[in-house]
Length: 340
Image 1 (cartoon, rainbow, N blue to C red):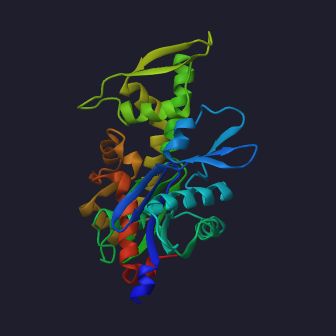
Image 2 (cartoon, rainbow, N blue to C red):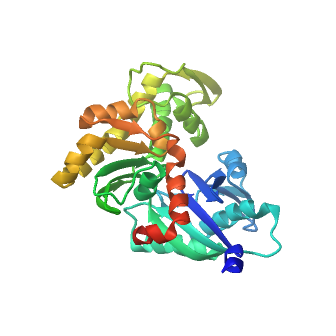
């Protein structure tokens, strides 16, 4: 058995629309953007992760960048396989004298279809996994922030990723009610691009919009500790010449308003579908925000004022899901019932 364990490599993967995180031996060993760069003429993979991200929006006609996941699910099967394989190679860079067998736990959106689930499993197997387990994202997020999911106590998790927002009420190691909507970080990025074009006649790219979101992204037009205005470079749509403007967090809050309202609606719908006994629990425990979207300034306050419930942002919300996936992998026998 000891020899078998030595030959088995265990990895926990948060395969996200925007970023992929991998835990191996209790450490986050990969934290890279979910993107690859491919040579069109030969189909050769020339970069993955951060290196491919640097090329995004700057390529010539023989290179294309691909984001294999869209709305939390695999959109490009072959690209996903190459990306997972490349990330696993990053773990094994130190060089094993023989290729280990890989046991993999991957988190998936709770609203995923059987076909989409099969695509994840096949991509993982083609990338070299011998055993593949899948865990719903809200479940992994709950485990990652230290909630005992086996308790007969209701907890609501709101996980805002790149492609989907997963809202789930968890009790007794199961999801009692959930809402999965395809409004999340990518929509925020698109909203910012559209706002800059409409309001400032400025054409900006995805990476610039992402940076704006990080620097001055907000869910409320008035904050206690506001960030400073951010300088944005882009192309003037009137003259075609590059120019720079400054944007405030209030403007970005205005541009994101409609998308955030959709998330609020989904939260209220999930609360509406929650059994009364669990609603009583949630009144006590409040709502937990995880995922990259949880870092949006003032989002907790906005959801709290809409739901009239306390909202807590998880410590290090970006890594909550992968941490939970890693814990589930380590205690596979205890969490087998929630695996798919």
